[in-house]
Image 1 (cartoon, helix red, strand yellow):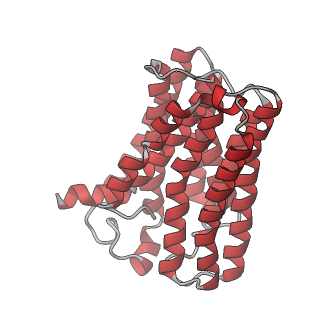
Image 2: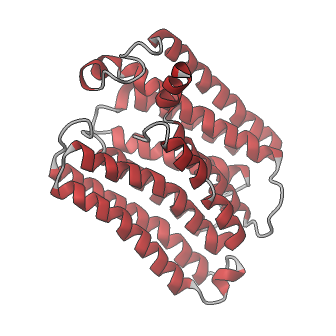
Length: 310
């Protein structure tokens, strides 16, 4: 049990639900799914690619940070000796291979070669972030690209994105994720309020861009019956409330940039990715699919009872 818990901590297992939410929401929005039903095999390969590459990123993150963690987080699985560094490195590289292979199978199954290209780009971005970009000024940008590509993994499996509104979602959610990464940069110690403020503005910009997708969807007279029945204004209000609830936690961290406060804001922002994905699905696909995406909060919250999400 101790060994299993160490691996769950190394993988940040609750966060995998956010990766699944990206791919599921991206697939549903690009395919304009309406009725609840079984999803095609190609989607499941894309989901497998996303989860494997996300897991690889978590493992390799700690492999390359092992020396730093010995000083700042000695209780983590690698510096504590609960998991051997060599074993973790081999598992991380193996997961990158599995993720790339699953993306190719999703491309073959869906008939859309772009899926394989997105999978290759996501694999490269995960490696580049962990190995080279993480401690540099480019780190948040590369992490944001990982999140954008994860959305595109689902979208391209469905043959999209086709409409201009679809492109705003991976762009906005990538910027949001980059902002979270910048906000979390010094979470192990005391953060700088100025950096936290810039990160919060980036998150706000990302959420504004992603929210604009529904505006364009309504302007084009598209979307689910829920949106076409005149519910654009209530949806915008819901999006605004979610945005404010996320950024309020950020504001508390800016006012008191202690480690605990910042980690709470980061954890809340990560968890909110699932809720945000569900709310983006609502106007494009309707209430039923939005609820399905929202149910991914269950494994996230259960996993968080075992290990930290940050």
